[in-house]
Image 1 (cartoon, rainbow, N blue to C red):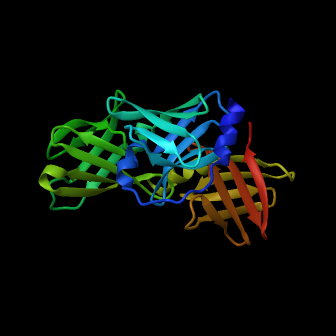
Image 2: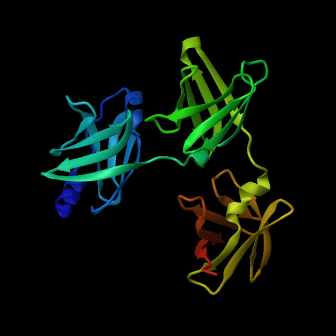
Image 3: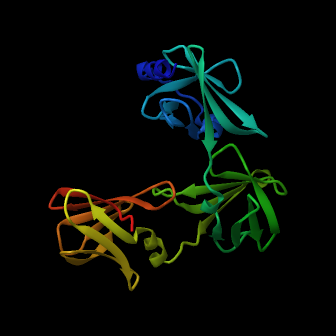
Length: 288
């Protein structure tokens, strides 16, 4: 059955897409972890105007609306993707084909992603919002209105506040970091936008600090912070690393080279690629 499911997914081709109302699919979008299948992850996303499902490493397909709620047909192959909800929040996905089923459990962003202080422009009804984590829920403290909790919704990074019937929508940058908060008070026709207070540059560099061993050459790289700047140290010497416009990529001062850090889901460095004169060299964190 596992082989059959994999083969069927791989057989699905790119189908003619049609424009769909993207917002109605927001509640399904996310990553779902799978056990007991040839693949470990199902990703539900938008591909242009099309609603899309991907069994990572096995295949993907456009998902077409059916006559059943929360059930979608796989394009060009006999099968369905259905979603189940708890208290209105989509929690699971079920892939059904040829009499077999694979179930995935949705993974939500940790609440710590949203914690912080968000400052709003002066003159508005809200000056700042402090967001914290309290017993598995997000709490908010607004000087002008007091404290409350905001509830998770089925849409990624979107929460709901009951007292004022307000949507709290957190926005991320290209690196995946939460950087702003949008509050939509629909009853008042009002939208407020605040920027998150970011930590000092030295703190943001801490995740790159470590010792890394190269796999193809007898050399190691140590990264450290001095005077708020990050440096790379090898047996050949020390150099200042300058941030570029690309996430986690640094130029090496004084030489034709770069250092690229790859982060895992926990935000820790899992791999380093040092490129010198166009030649990439890969290093991994030291076990020491």
